[in-house]
Image (cartoon, rainbow, N blue to C red; front, side, top):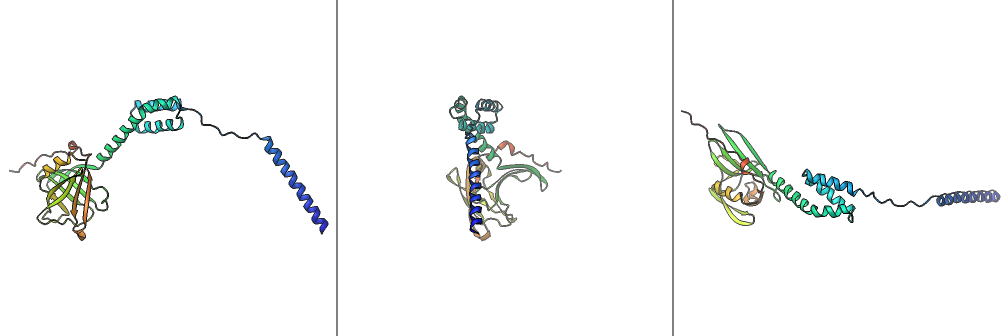
Length: 244
């Protein structure tokens, strides 16, 4: 048994040496691999950047410009891009914000109880977005012009006895809005001075209103980012002709 064990160990050890020798010789025969530097295609990317500027695609131009500057910071392409990229990026951010604000408004013209109404509506923004209250500007062929808040998230309206005063801010400047609840029971608050409110709103970017909901008398600050309002999209409607 000792002889068998010695022979087995010796054979195994020799085999290990052979394998190790093969491995070492194989490693020595292979040249170490060098990390390949990225191909310098900055000139081609610069051409794409120029084309994006020509067609006015600011979003893609900003993306391409940043890639050139980050990947090839010392190249001639990066130097050229850096002359225009800050202005293009600023314009892109401003236009994106302008489009975002404009997209918050919904304009509609539709039949409404024997007449036609034209509305411009915006929903409150965070932090109180769990409560959905629309600020609505309305023109109706028979009822004329109104501005009101409407709770779209439930049947409960607002706490307002007779005429109440809503504490408000217009771009941080304090103000107030006189309002009243409709006698018909809708979850709404109608503003008494619609023209005055619209005049203030058109000059503002953000309006806040402190209201109290009937549901648990919860006090809420409603925030409206009104800077994207486009007056021309809120269509006028003709008065209904009186029947003889």
